[in-house]
Image (cartoon, rainbow, N blue to C red):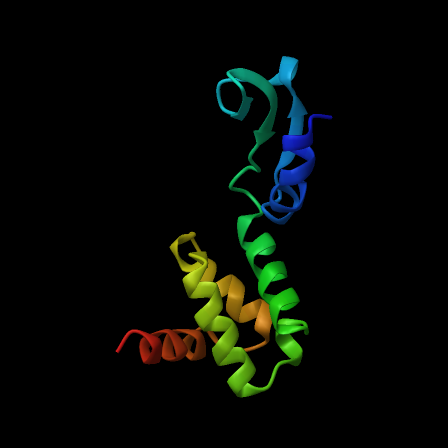
Length: 116
């Protein structure tokens, strides 16, 4: 694998994407170009499952599963999920509330406090 693809591997993994060989790059992939040549590509993940990936990132950052967080920890998680764009996804408030073990009204309350 080309050194550029190797160097980008942590970013690709964190995004839930995958690296593909130069001959497998399609129009929807992000081509990695080195000295004018395509040396590899990055295939972005589908939208389906995005919220789960974002939640996993936040749990990793906070060092604990969402349901085990204290109230301030859950507020911090909501802030981070909002920063990462989680709430633009359909049904995200309901899904996050379920993942945290709180009501959707509580999620809306935390979001309203952030956007005041």
